[in-house]
Length: 129
Length: 129
DNA sequence: CGTTTATCCGCACAGACGTACGGATAAACG
DNA sequence: CGTTTATCCGTACGTCTGTGCGGATAAACG
Image 1: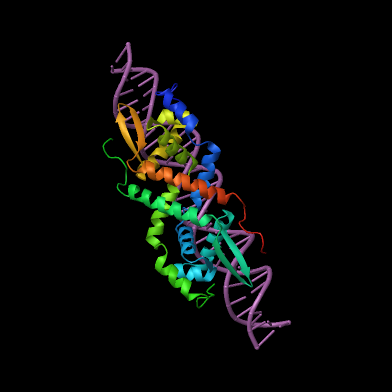
Image 2: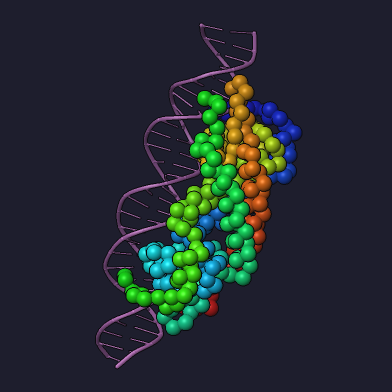
């Protein structure tokens, strides 16, 4: 269990310790990535990028999804601080928070690049075993 | 359960249907985001950005993490096609797959933007209820 | 060969998450 | 007021996933 008493390459270990992500910073990233890790939330964000402001029911219609599920997804997005709700009577209209739109669009585009890399192979390596 | 018989704003509904993410495309995104949704995997990717190639034990040392956990994280990253393993004797050396490095770095930077938005508030809205 | 070492795997377990459903809230509408 | 409607919440349930541990594999080392 406790192999590896001393580093194989101490230089790189130090480099990572100096230039890598701290545990808390990585935690922050992971929490944000987890918000994007649900298809419905991704589709909602994309929908709000296209159509500035929408209510729950219209989103459910447009995405062909359950209204409860959309409501729950919007709650998560709101908790994450990515969307903003405007109350008008009994309706709730949602839109991306200021600054989130650009950042989300950028993330989506970068993920698209990544997905091209990720879909080349399913194992990522087969010249071993 | 089945409120909202007809759209409030049919135009936007149509716009989303035309310009939004398809269900399958969103699924692909979500799967990739889920890979980044673990702090250890994020730290490993960041480490490999800094130090091209590392073995499991050195990564565990540098990140102060359990070797089993690192091994498991690398397996997930390999399954996702993001890292590549080079076998040398009993050691396994990992590095980012070609093309993944740039894309990952870009995603990390965009996520940093997003995290600035996301950490302003915990509810994303308080002028309601 | 036998032992040590680096990594990996199978399994069981605990925690987080999305979904469904019943009910609550609260506004529109007469 | 009473009813309908749009959204939200609390709870329960099944699923997925990261972790820990024992053991397997396989190379180095004498």
